[in-house]
Image (cartoon, rainbow, N blue to C red; front, side, top):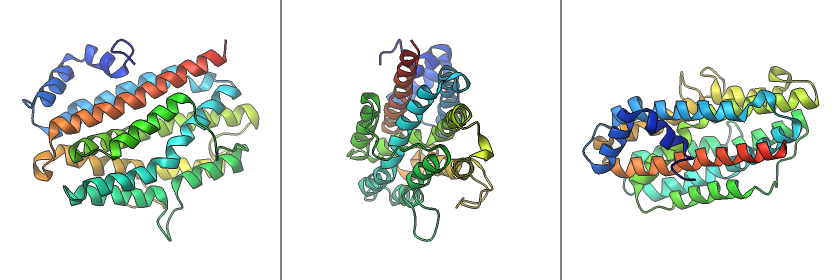
Length: 277
């Protein structure tokens, strides 16, 4: 990745007001975590993922391209629960409230006893049952390994504020990524078994669990699983002074992971395009 190929730099180039705020926050002259999240970081994510969704072009994929995306996108779900657990342990001495939120997410992602099974189990079973796709044991592409490694480095950080920002970025993109993934699995279903949406019942359950505010599996009233994760972690940046989160460190962590996630998508898009040549 270079500044010339970065989605984040592209956004900053066309939104100079956000560039000014980002630079100010990193330099310590802009101190409103709430304004940073609500007026700048959240719109940045929306814009970046609009570009990604458009370039993926789910409705135009062939079966091999769709399968490649599905396999690569399954990998991070294998490890997210253990990353959340590691992150919670890393921050618990500094900010027990942040550790509590990360552990709540860990239990939800990893499968709390008596509740919804681990999300990777749900997803991998759904792919197998609805589409006949076996992703268990898939050996990831180099760009996916890089993404996983960068998350591994992040959760082992000695800087709790950096972890707070990094995991906010990880969760903040989750709704957009889940929507893109749903479009891709629908496309694969249409191409292979002429079925999509609710005609793929286990995948439909998985997507509604993550995206619907009133799904039976949600644990925070009025918020989907992903929306609850986003808001739960955003509060530590919005209220950085209350939780003693160092805002420059949090923003640095956010940018590390957002850039990593966006670049991962850019490389998958290039891989998909090469499959069509």
